[in-house]
Length: 284
Image (cartoon, rainbow, N blue to C red; front, side):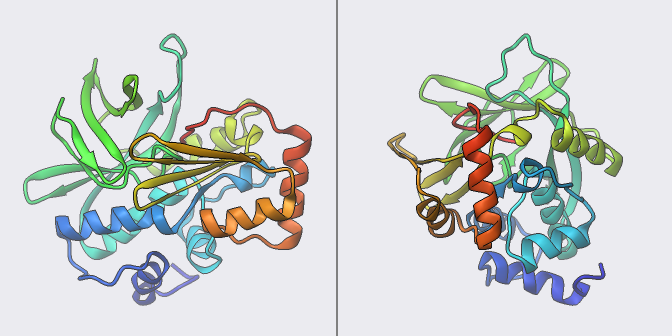
């Protein structure tokens, strides 16, 4: 790591997410970091949406997400979280998944999502701090068919043929988020998935702007020009912005994303010109 020294890395990350607790590989520390990370660092796809590359080397991610205080999508968030957990001393295995959220059963999907497995004191936990507005805010224990309540909804792990399935409880029932196996993914797996996700012309990340963040008891999401806030009871409010200044202020105050005047103007102009329909709850 050259952008920031290893000794300063954890301190800078803890300052970014507002963590002030012990630095040890315990379940309590894992739970607290998992809760704070998606509250502090937004999920956003500005780079691919604007036709820019998404580098996955740790230096680039640290510079973007810690030093410039920007967000990113799953490959960036979970690469950063992996490095943090390893630096603390956790035993972590990177995994790769097929997104199934809001995908019809007959549609095949590629390996385009990153998550982590943490083994701790004889138990295993699945960790994922970046799946858009369905992001977990707590690690999920590796136990099958058991509802697990988190600060932002109920999840469960289920068997799906030869794969595992993370499922989220919606008002209409259990909805599959993604499928994955326990096989360790290599960096090239993430590079290929990231390249496809950030360059494939039909990728949702190239065709819609998606920004989300969790806050205590609520999830907040901006899809193009439309802001949605949904609480744990399922109640929501929605507002569509027609004014760029008000839109940028919402990004800053509600979603924790500070943009330069030029970048904000370019983004809002692009939204106005090419924004298409996007699912309300989108992950990646």
